[in-house]
Length: 114
Length: 112
Image (cartoon, rainbow over all chains, first blue to last red; front, side):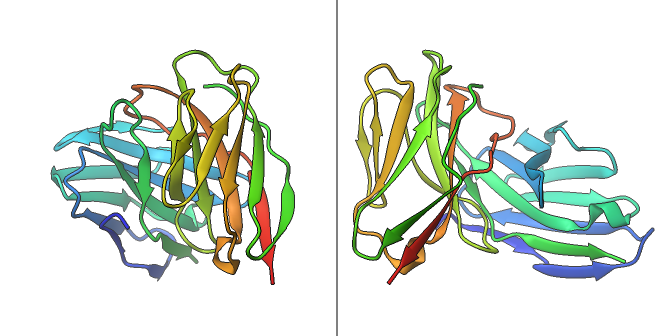
């Protein structure tokens, strides 16, 4: 299994509080991604990174920010958590393997905003 | 990226081969076929990918038709741990960023 960890694995927080989720990889892969998964919507890309300090928005980026100061860490911050951000969050990594860029996923973080 | 069509569910007996079909009739020449699966409450797991040749790894085999409009994922000896949702995804070669377009997938249930 790819060396990807996410922390925390479970979190309950109140509306309006900031929350930071961490993704850590030991594979030295260049690309990292944050997805959220909700019933009826499947996996949706929030933000991704194509290198240290190089990030861009995905399809559902409103209310989220990211940072990548080291190759191995990709942080997702909810500036002011809302109930609509209750979800399971997955981090993924990928690297150039002859153009295929297959993605490997972490175990997920279950976030509940009350 | 091309759209894919998969059956919503299928059952398989433990120890038997599971053959999972996927239709991708609008696939273009530079698009790969990827397969992932998601076991309940876990992150998606990469299984295999291919362009036009059949591929095999330690998890599965991928058979792509000559016209590339459909493919079949084969789990040679299904076990109970293979119960999962299986996703067939078509994605452009060399596309280093961007989301994987997960559809509804096929719910595979392996029974004793």
